[in-house]
Length: 337
Image (cartoon, rainbow, N blue to C red; front, side, top):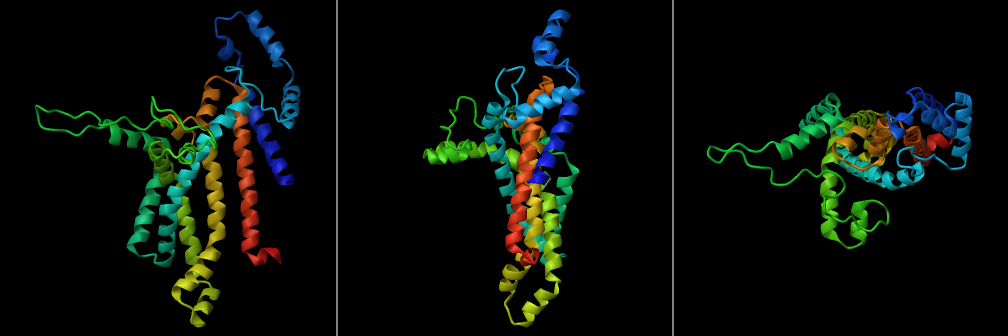
């Protein structure tokens, strides 16, 4: 808990300093045509004329009371906005991790067992591709190839129009979202028994999740491959085979169990990274999550919005690390000695 507090304090200090060094937010909220007298009056009301140390102390004092501030543009408390937008980001991140686990873990295990196999080469090829392209560029490429690149037909037919619009946002225009229970549209639609709407929300999730998975999954593949390869060549696996245990038993009981800690660590890191790192993908796919909210805050020089998103992302990141440490402590007896 001490480490959590220190990390969060460091995040707040760095974020506060950076946002305050980007200029005044008053022109974004009041406009450039406002007189200097009004600007000065508003700055005095907002405490922007105080020394930076005093401003920081005031912010931290409110923060300790659970107050993330109020957006200077929308006049809505930042905590309320984040509470509405965080489920959208969480849903995309959960689905992204699911897609990453589907391809990166099996290919990583296979590559660790048979480094020269075809699946190992396929996984390495996907990993090379994923680390070579930015996620936002890949998202734009997918949208262009799948929705805006019409097939060419001989004249006089000419090019065909796109059969359906790209799945931007969480639901299409004119579609009513499900009644909010968890904030995860797919889950809420299933709870309501509306399977058609559940499929619709899932369809909107696929492209951003696949985009992020192809760029965030390669480290997961490589760490899995390395961990499995190391576990396979370890003495305890050779001892297990010498006792006459079957290949499947050794793989599940010894290899995968001992290879899982670094994979869990990286999965937690990936989740935390995607919470705040999928910002541009959210913008590309018009996804109304906290990433898009942070970009909106930066565009409008809205300090509290940007700091609120950064702080929430940092809290989630640190909590995930703490949970992973507990899981590793439970799985590895050596850590309890």
